[in-house]
Amino acid sequence: MSADKELFKTVRDNLYTAVIGDVLDVAGLTHQFLPPNIRALFPDQILVGRAMPVLEANSTGTQIGHSGKSEPFGLMFRALDALQPGDIYITTGCTPNFALWGGLMSQRAHSLGAQGAILDGYHRDTREILNLKFPVFSHGSYAQDQQLRGRVIDFRCSIEFGNGARVDPGDLIVGDIDGVVIVPKAHVGDIIAEALKKVAGEDAVRDMILKGGSTQDIFDKTGIM
Image (cartoon, rainbow, N blue to C red; front, side, top):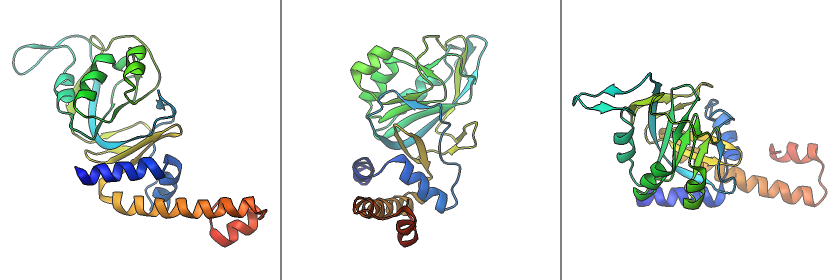
């Protein structure tokens, strides 16, 4: 866990989604951004953490679980309670016609040490989330409840977004004002190291621009622009 804390701080202090995405492209990992309509509620926040994927599905009403009790939200409560420090609750799988996240869920996730929530749909209770300052990325705010309309059918599983982006448990997630990018867990070390090098190169290019260098000359020398 301490290694992840160091990693999260390094990413938060030095990197951003654009540079990470560029490095992923060079590595041949070209479908790592989530759809562009998933945006930050807090544009100034940088979200960094490990994926805890949650699979949603459409529903037509209350379902009965294995215990014989009604489960109006499916496995959502279990998924929420399964969050661990450093996790990001990230979900897709249903039509985006209702809210997948709210204020009380934010409170619970925050109390468990989760880093944030990413929703392929809407959130609600915006004022409560704003007061808590819990990082949320979504399509926007919409108060329609999911109780009669959607349910969680699995969690800590692989999920895939409509644009082809795949998220596996433990993948590194970075979100900022420009979007959300997924770094597969097997590639985290290499990708972050290369991204840090690219940032250093971009700083050098910025100095060249300030000194009056031409775009073409700078690109020919550095391969960066």
